[in-house]
Amino acid sequence: MDVAAGPWPAVFGERWQPDRARWGECVGEPAERGRIRAPDHRRPARVRVVALGIPSILPGGFPSIAELLRSGPTFSFEFFPPRTEEGERQLWQAIRDLERLRPSFVSITYGAGGSTRDTTVELTERLATETTLLPMAHLTAVNHSVAELRHVIGRLADAGVNNILAVRGDPPGNPMGEWIPHPRGLMYAADLVRLIRESGEFCVGVAAFPFKHPRSPDIDTDTAYFVAKCRAGASFAITQMFFEADDYLRLRDRVAAAGGDVPILAGVMPVTRISTIERSEQLSGAPFPRALAAEFERVAHDPAAVRALGIEHATRLCSRLLDEGVPGIHFITMNRSTATREVWENLALGARV
Image 1: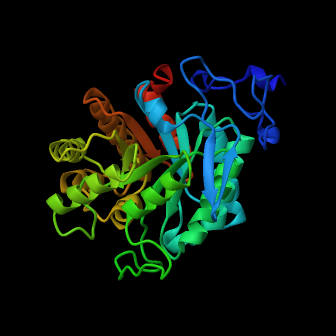
Image 2 (image 1 turned 90 degrees about the horizontal axis):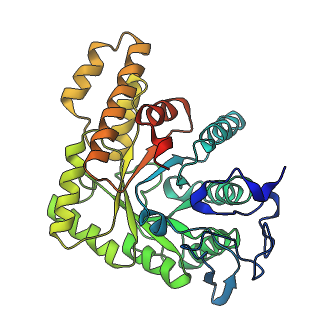
């Protein structure tokens, strides 16, 4: 196989050969050792990292999500670290199935309380070195000292990963429990954004909450917190999952009114079974829309009808968001590919990327 010939997404130019993506080993014959070859309009990043007080310049680097957003809407997929061998098999099947769609990027979440730190980093490294996908790592501050966070950041940069989603995270065991910072750690997501930006030339994203963060006392306070995270150095944001376009549009409007101007990508998860509704409320902290819940209740006895309705609703939601000028759609896959692929095909997104 001629790796340098593809099949790479055109927006990425020539990418690293998966099993040679290490220090200075790149496809082709770049003018400078350690750099990827890219279209003339995009200069590949050289990631500078300060890990545990030792500055270094890391070769190569992937396009930043901020760069991709300047070229038009992005379409991306989110996965989570599996806990079992069967879960890992299912994850990689989903990754390979969705890789063919050439998404703008993919992300790996970080378990509650940092419980999947090593797995998240290892998966992100594998995506960076064994696939044609552009990886984004999630990183949380929960149960981590600043030194530990710097170590994780350094590992990601070592694999060429320069896109990170910074979230403070929830306490392990009880997402709504008391949040106690690590004695040598960070208190707020904005602090984590600053740490990542100070550690190297990273593109940092943050979380946005259409309904508001469950811990925020009110919408105005939540908006102020969000704008502060962005001003700490974030280049984009991704929303928690939501199911009504107006929730996203209200978020976009109030952030703009408060002086925020970072692109806010929409987090979308198709409902494929009734249990997804309860799960979505647990994950997002926001109530599921009553009118939509009633539609699902009418077909709750028929799993195939529930799934069909979920695909139809997600397709309508994404179509409306695209019509409203959303800068990107981030599909929450739950490590399964079929539903996401059906929505993708309904929207003919392959023609957009």
